[in-house]
Image (cartoon, rainbow over all chains, first blue to last red; front, side):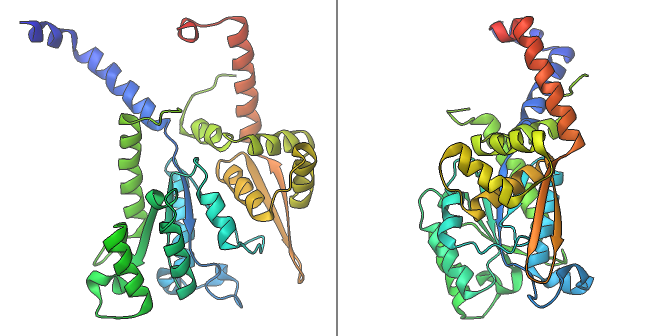
Length: 200
Length: 114
């Protein structure tokens, strides 16, 4: 009987109001995302002139495409800016990534150096929960026979951290980085709605 | 001017959610366009602390991505120069937010009294 009374209160208008309120609160959640990855694909070239086919395989272009997509979809996404030709020491990047305002860190590792940096970040207890690693599917440990240093780093991360995702920029065998990131950010927003930070 | 609390406004508010970025915007609103070095010198003078180029670039890029600032790059063979100024949209939104805050002070709504 009590339940029936309660359900009576939730008529169509009330439901619409609840939905609108939740939708509005969801839209008010703006995750701050940092995307780490390689600088220019070829230091000798101006990347803006790269051919479309080359861009599909280039992590620099993947990173910038992801930045644009996330910024167009309600996030604030930033990269360590190469336009200014700044040299970022990894310690300095680490200090920035430790900032509480940084929600998620997407990383496109492309070299032994960046893999070492990736391990450094995932061993930092503050940064670790934020890190999501995006790996071209042909190098992901689940889909390659390679025993390279990078693959072994990915394997270690899969075992100890977990967030290592294969992507396919052609959207044939796997999802694109944009799809993966947008799906994650949608779920992240819902999680934040249900579990708001204590200092919010 | 009315202010619709849409995602663009929320992104601007998120981008402003830092004392460093607030200080940057306060400077640029009053004196745009300002060079990267100009901003760095201003911040160091105001706070009495050094700010690294990397950290400043991080804050500036968040303001650019939040559509509060726009960046103009000019290159020469030796180096790249950048200057920053406030976007028109940010000026309008910040003005509207200022008006709303003033109005709220004069005529508190029921919501704000709760």
